[in-house]
Length: 254
Image: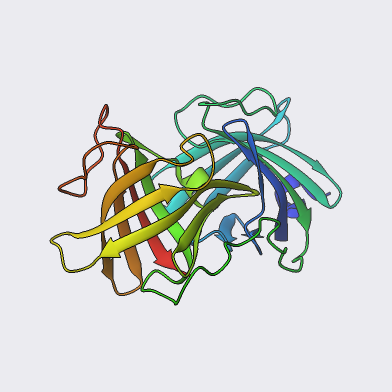
């Protein structure tokens, strides 16, 4: 009689995800592949690999995902799961050593709840509208996927980073997390300064109408941006420490 690990073999597509209490849409063709006792996650920016262990005798059933390749190498996510035919519900603690007790994710918890279905689904169309072109293309043009983010000294969890994209058309940029636009700006920049400078005029959200000064660098297909809080002085270096209000983000061209 097949056990749950046998039943999990194959490809599972992420249909929905909630992280830190926020519902996010799948970033395109996000999926988890189980082969034997190994798992691979694809379509989430970086590729994550490792081993998986399940215990279906526990209530709720338990799962341990031990990463040995990718950005989470050396980490273990403890979780619980439900498996019903071709539907798999997964709840993981993306940080810490305390296993979730229920399929709930609250703000600041680091808990990710995923709903997956068997098989490889067609890539989903982004529901959020890209920014309209507001001028000729610049070196920022196109779509970028977040590699890492530090906000006011606090690093974002990898589970949240994988859902964030940056889209630039002309001199407007939108930063999108799942289905939500979290930043929309019009920008100017000066690559002749050292470091190169950038300035945002916020068009969306609580900072609408306010300006933010920043610096940036582009190394091939990697973009690094450090911005001050609205109205604060321009950063002199690429750092984000607690209490500074700075955002330090790294992006890779999609």
